[in-house]
Each structure stands twice: as structure tokens, then as C-alpha cells.
Length: 192
Image (tube, rainbow, N blue to C red; front, side):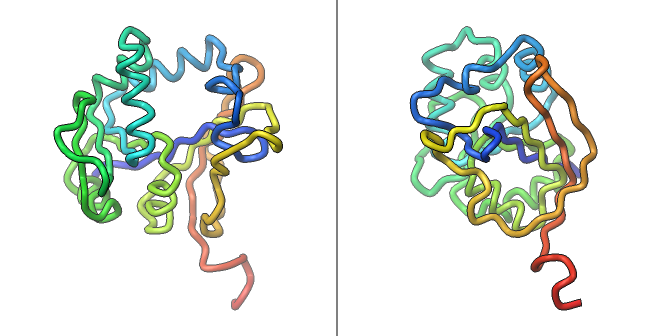
């Protein structure tokens, strides 16, 4: 049985991106980039939605020699979409047009390879609500993008408690926080 990690990179105020800011808010450092590259080397299946697929496959075709993108191209990927059609242009990518939660539940039962998400806010929200996420991992970048931020990561998420199981600082400024999530029916103590 495999496990599923939801991965996000966010600004301190919870955005996944910001208008006019470079990728990683221009703060990626050598420790963080080495960790990303090393993480990509470990066998896993990357899960994503159509929007993330379009973005990442575009980056991969524009920068095929980038070590991080080359590593991502080499691993198996699964994209969940009702709008994309086969054949997909990005190598090692399988399209699933049906129920993402059901497909991931089946993958977790039959496959021993770890599963990890890339971006894909609505996919991650659906998987979390269904209770199939084993770990919730966030890298917090020390910026606040209140004026230019877009893609608020946690909007429309259910209430969740998070038990911290790992943490690390990269390059003296980026915080990795890894949690075991528990989806709540409501605020703790209500209705007890």
C-alpha cells in the first residue's frame, strides 16, 4: 500500500503564486534546489490536475535540460482531467478522465510507490476531504503577497488539524513543515 503526500509552496499569507513575482518568489537557494532535485530522484508517482499539467509540461518542453524538470519528466505522472485528451505530449504521463478520488484510492491499494501531488489546488482539496492524504507538506517562503498574490491555497478547504512530524529550514529562510492531517467535521469541542 502506498502513501500520499500533498505538497505546496506558499507565501506566508497562503498564496501559491503572485503576479509579477518570479517562481519561488525569487528566493530559491542551493539547499532548497538540491532538496527538490533529490526528492525527484526518489521513485514516486506525481499527481496533478489539468492546469498544473499544462503549466509544468510547458516548462518541461521549454527547458528540457533543467535538472529538476528533467527529473520530473522521467518519473511517472498521472493527470486528472475531463478537458485534456490523449495522447499527452509530456512523457510518462497517464490521463485519468474519471473520478480522481476513486482512482487514487485504487492506486494506494494496488501500488507500493509513493504518491505526491504537484500544485493542483482543487485536486488536493478533494483528496484531503476524502481522507486519502497521509501527509501534508508545505514549504513557506518568507514573503507576504497581499497586493499581488493569487491562488489562495487553503480557500474552501475543510477544517483540519495538523500534527507536525517533520520540519526543516532551507537556506536560512525557507521553512518546510510536514504534518499528518485529520479532517474535522467542525471546530473541536463543538457538539461533544
